[in-house]
Image (cartoon, rainbow, N blue to C red; front, top):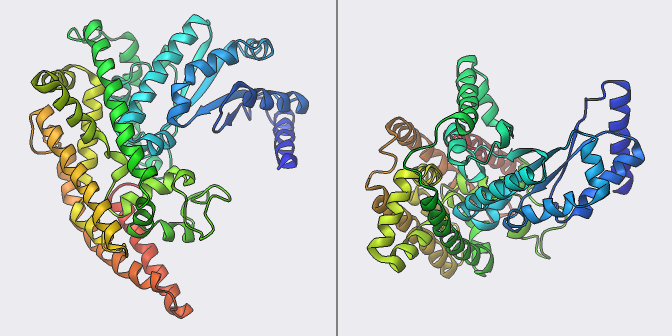
Length: 453
């Protein structure tokens, strides 16, 4: 592994010297934990005589919480500050949307991203460095996807000084940019949102004292949501069996959809059963979309909202309604939750749940998922005052509701042939044919749901 790393930096140096000094500019450090991770890369760059910008990537909930502390410690190191000065005091920092969501659930992850952006931005101003945030988004809502214009308006610290970088992945590139007219519209929305957050007038009803109180409420909501989500996903001993059998994750691992394996190397147990903790975020989301649970895009939100409303009574519910009316961040959060719930289909998800052999695990886990789904829908109705999800966005709602029935038959086929494929003892020609059918259902469902994870 060490030889591969040295070879990589030698290649960077060769490209820069023979082709263009700006050909390779950034090196992203995944799962960065502390300044020494960055200094190691800095040393490698110095030894190889390559000129790079180092981009730390904060991925988990804990990483986001410690983002300001991490950057402050990094900037206090003289050798790194000297490196930064040689590059115009410019620092890029990447924020992971996918792993933070898988780690803590949709509501908690989005709040931690908001807080990290704000804290890191204020620190950059204090340290007089030029900051650019690199948003590691995916195509789905639970991986940071959705409407870019609304997302930036909702998170005013996302584009510090008008600078922003965003990943556009897989199907998102073709959907957004293959048609010149649609591409122009997407770019216009993105640019206009960045300009508006810095030059446009702030909403008159957005009182700083109220925003501070709403941020405190979001802290409570995020904490409750995180605890409920984390205990269900990572601490319930029956959940892993449910996940493995009620989604096509085993099939996704076999046919290797995507650029990397579903798991990081060596992260299965003795029985080759996936460890949820080490499963990559893309197959995690993809498998829930395929089985129409879409659990990763809403689970835990309903519990947090209901717990707060019950604790605070009518006053608390009134405050949540006010947040929805006047705070763009909360508006965007609830709109994305509505979109995810409309795409979810509990009846189709029940078909996949029936694949779980252990009756106790099946009833307990699916029962809890179903209760949380209806609780989330009920709380959204109470807060927004609208009982039909996405009624404020009729075009989007109609698009989803018209498309979903065409996906349903593919789900029926996938469930049927998953049963056959998992039986074992099938002769190779027939097994290969079943696998081909399943691959077609995966592609069809992904296209119909407009999501590959």
